[in-house]
Length: 524
Image (cartoon, rainbow, N blue to C red; front, side):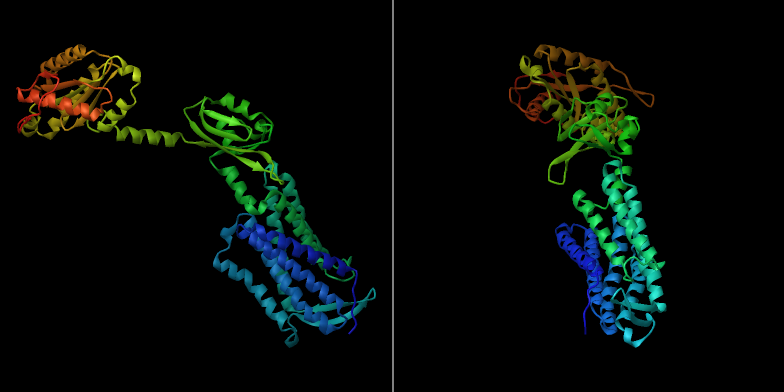
């Protein structure tokens, strides 16, 4: 058998080598299913163009038909991978349910079976012969029903659908990605044009099918975009959907700290439209709309918090560098996350964790934290005075009038004490009917005088519950907190004073230097 090498074979050879080179180069970027599908596209195109090349060098019908199997292996896999890649690239993976995938693979799988058994039927080719054209033997075919099903329901449908998805995806990119998006759009158009011209009988390749060449050309353009701009690392429509719909404000800054793109969320936060923001200085924009005192920034790093000047909203700020093709810093991505609700929830939880639910006074933890946060100046010249106060005969009051009455008295007494404390003092419900008072910036004598007045006021106060006047008294024990002494130890010493007051008959204010704790009795 003689061999031939038509001029188009040089293009097939170049296209096959290009597709194979791109496939090898893409192996290091297999980070998700989209990039794996793209590798499948490139390998299929390499097989497709290699099959066309090998088929064209033969001068017998048997040779060219034999290599049609390799051609259609590349065709079928190529268009399937092309469609699946476009679907993933456009962020529409939800389309690919098991049933849909099965239906999409039905015609391609049937095509491979028909091509593998060409000698046994005429479903794919009704007639095949070699004709001499421009001094080369070209395979001329009359197609059967199987071919038309494959070409219409698989090759053309999948090619056009995939190309339209790629065009749609590229056209929806924001301005910062417009250049690489144009490459994607052009790449998507070429296979469609080549298919239409070939089907309409426009012969510009000597009778040979140029579709695979145009697919490889498209692959080159897409690879340039994906390699230069790392598109395969994140499906652009999925990325763009996040960019446009995420509640986090996003700014894209160039190295001069000017805004090159923003998402709608940021535009809404500052009450401006995107066109007004693009090109402006980011620092100036933020300074107009936020309190930036808690923000630290340099050309490549933004961190901290921004508080809106027009509302009570608080934003957490973070950033990350945008790497260019050669690893240089091409800009900065700045994120503004509205943490107002989270801060409010945390403050509410903290308040609940530090507040007694019955009296709304601080609880033990709340008072411990308050003392821990005391400025050193408040206790530098006068030690803090720690007081333990206990309602007298509270058990008997509960037994006689009920726990609702007891709760009412606790609430009234708590408010009564809190209303009479100074701005440098605090009171907390320590537990049960016990209250702990911490006073600062008072001398020991001043503290005793205040407690004596408070004790007398409580004794004279008429506490009314369901039209009943109830007399309430309290016993107080006070100590001066020692240097480096924990609040709990000071409380224990004050507790001893208070129980000594109980032992002496209740309703006094005791402040002896130290006493031994004694039993206060069953109805204390």
